[in-house]
Image (cartoon, rainbow, N blue to C red; front, side, top):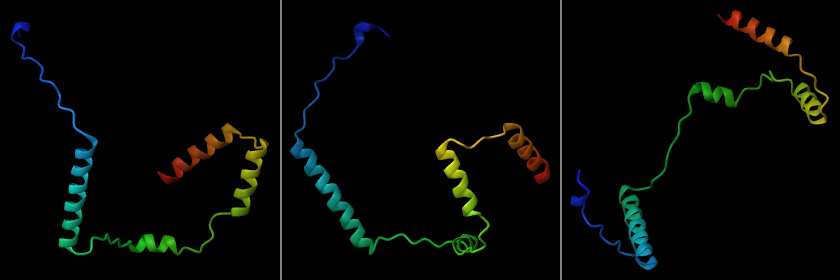
Length: 98
C-alpha cells in the first residue's frame, strides 16, 4: 500500500437534532403500526410444574431465627469463622455427593 494512493477524506455532514427526532418518531410510529397489525403484543410465560412447587413450598427448611442471629453477629462484628471447620465440611459434602 502506497501512501500516495490514499483517498481524500470526505467531510461529514452535520445533521440537526430536529431531523434525528423526526427519524425516531417515524421509527416509533412504524413500530406501533406493526404491533397494531399483529394484534395485542404481550408475552405469556408458563411456569414448569417444578417452579410452581417451589413457589408454593411451605416446608420451612430454612431456620430464619438462626439466619437472623448470624446476620446480627455479622453486623456487630462478633462472628468468628473457623476456616478449618468450613473447609472440612465442604470436603465432606463433596465426598457425600460423589
